[in-house]
Image (cartoon, rainbow, N blue to C red; front, side, top):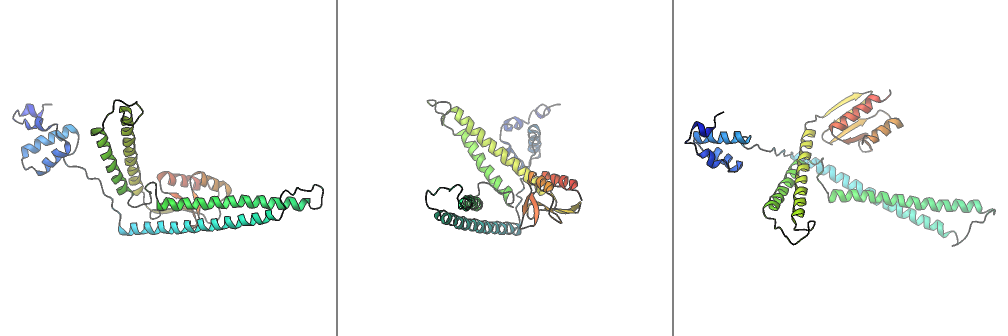
Length: 304
């Protein structure tokens, strides 16, 4: 195929602009009224396999109602977790005091009198103390579990898929990472007097670039996953008398059983990531194509 330059030797602009950034050429293309220049630019874009018009990344801005609903849901969770953390903390303290009270009833160092009429009572008393200690530890761990959930809501370590602004926030993080990557590529000062693994070495710089690039790739992948989830429609269907609900508002796949499922079914649900929600009175997990597929598989196997 004949090149544009061969077809018209006077169009030297093709070569002179070829090395310019695509973004610059797109700006020229949008502003110029010279049809000959546009023809040249079309050839450049064709060579680069890009569109002359920059593809706009959808902002996917949520509605005010969606943001409000998400905040209300988050605040409701926060209140519930704070209440559960405080409740279990108080129970743990009460159980601890009860255990100490039981322990104080036995003189320090008092051995079990084998064969004495008090032996059985002594052993039962020690068992109560032991059970009280175990219950104290269990309640304390539950309290810490809910405290961690409170901390995760107040100081999130990542962007929740439930957040209607998740894609916008991920794109903002990608933009910051792109700036970091550009800086590392163009402004990094190489120090020749350091070892390969130390900060400032060429090896260290390479690791930094790889880390930033990996984070950008992972966040872009997650955006694609969220967009795929957004395409899943809300719907309810019944399989073997059990309702499978895809609740987009709550971002959950919910299973409503008419009665308590068998132990075998509960085991399958748990192994597939479903958990019982007392609030929704349903077995549920976050929406995904995999979650829907596994839910259908489980319900199809339920014996009615």
